[in-house]
Each structure stands twice: as structure tokens, then as C-alpha cells.
Amino acid sequence: MPHARRPQPGPVRLAHWANVPLLAILALSGLQILVAYPMMGPQGAPYGVYHFQGTPPPEWARLGGWLAGGRHWHFAFGWFFVLNGLCYGAWLVGSGEWRRRLFLPRRDARDALHTAAYYLRLRKEAPRQEPYNGLQRFAYTGVLVLAIVEVLSGLVLYKPVQLRALTSLFGGYDPARLVHLGVLALLALFTVGHVVMVALHPRTLGEMVTGGRRHE
Image 1: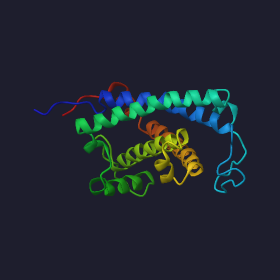
Image 2 (image 1 turned 180 degrees about the vertical axis):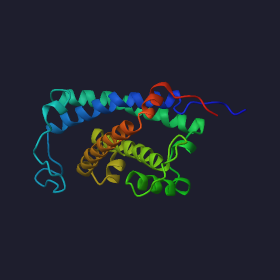
Image 3 (image 1 turned 90 degrees about the vertical axis):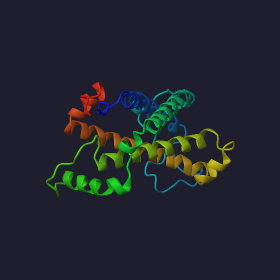
């Protein structure tokens, strides 16, 4: 008989809930760092695509109190975020779960479009779950890619000279800052959408807490 398993195994739940405080601390401390120079682009030549030039984030959205405090929080918990991601990635590969959980275009593209049409009320058939539909796989795979880009751009900001090859890949220090902040905004947008979807499907919250009922 096949081995019975829960919809959300322990490693998934552990990585998921660890990311909640880690991402919150990184976002708040990152905005505290931004206060030191709330501009995008080289000094004297700000990027026009950033519409909040010179406007620091509000105090309630910051952690650390000042530049050094924000940096201490950011870099300390940034390494825990990287470690959590590496452990989760190793589990995905080692367990073979990447086949079930990551977006594979040939398998998932059509289902993702059908699921999107369902949520837009253009299709009556409800999306399937096993444990994820194509749209969920696309979103979760996309957020993993965003997390990797966020870490790499953060390394550029941390060691731009020592990692000059990586810095060049982002187009320089200043473009890397814009990418880092932009990806943070996309991660925040994903979080809002994620919470909305959980509110629409509350069963998924219980599964992420208990693992869900075992099935073949």
C-alpha cells in the first residue's frame, strides 16, 4: 500500500511559519535602513520610476530605531531567512516533493489559466487541489524566485565590491537597491493575496497548522 501522508508535511509547515516573523523583521528593518537615504538612484540623479523620493517610511513600519540598529536586525535575521530557504530547498529536492509543489509549465499552465478564469467568474468549474492547483503552483514557485532575487540583491548591497560580478549582473549598486525594494513590494503584495485566499478557503489554514488528514 502507498505510504499515507499529510497534505502539508512538517518541513513545509516549519518553513512556512518560520518565514512569518523573519519576513516581518526583514521588511521593517529594511525600511529603517531606507530612512538613511530615502531615494532611489545615484545621488543627484534619482530614478523617476520611484514615486516616493525623499519620503521616509512611517515610524510604525520601521524596526531598529536608526541606521545601525536597522542593519543589525536586517543582517542577523537575513541569514536565518537564507538558512530556512536552503533547508526547504534541500527538502524539496531530497524528498521529490518539488514534482508536486513547483510549477511545471507543460503540466500546470492550462490548469493555472482555468483556475484564474474561475476566480474571475469566467468559469464555473472549481479548481482542483492535489495539494495545489496550477495557479497556486505558479504563485508559490514565483515567490520562491522572488525570494532568491531578494537575497542576491541584498548580497550586492552588503558587499558590492567583494561581489562585483554579482553587482554587475544587477547593473550596479543603485539598480540593485531599486530591485531590492521592488521585490519587497511584490512579496508584500503576495502576502496580502495569500491572506485573502486563506480567508476564502479557511481549511488550508488548519492544514498548515496540523498538517491535515492523512491520505494515500
